[in-house]
Length: 184
Image (cartoon, rainbow, N blue to C red; front, side):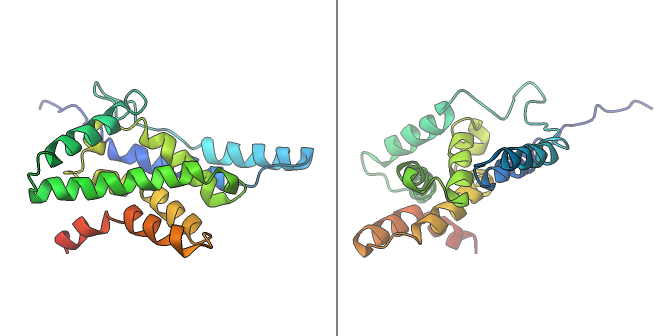
């Protein structure tokens, strides 16, 4: 009996990346004992890490920002001239809100002492190397992969004291909820 080659499940790797990027929430060390503690945490987080993210011919990562940028440009080109197909509007909501979330985390650098900022910035970097299959809004994978960025964005946004800044960020950063309503 002929054995079929084992198929690599690429979706398992990203869960492991979540564990590693979640390690960014550790407090920034101020003493040599804190550095030792952080090193111990890093070993615990990274040691069991065996990713399949680079396995196979078509890796799940790409050049920095290329695929996300392509997805944004493609979606924007579908919006103009106005052809408001449902799939285009949904893609714009997903990619637009993730872009707003990433931008907010980047411009919130003054909050870098916050654990959610550190987790969020890790996911901003992950966003820049994701493969086109994961970035494609039609698959919905990007909303699951980048979910910790969404949580970090909303947690950091709660610290915004000015309503004139809070509400626009909240609405634009959570537009990805609109396509979710279609699924329900």
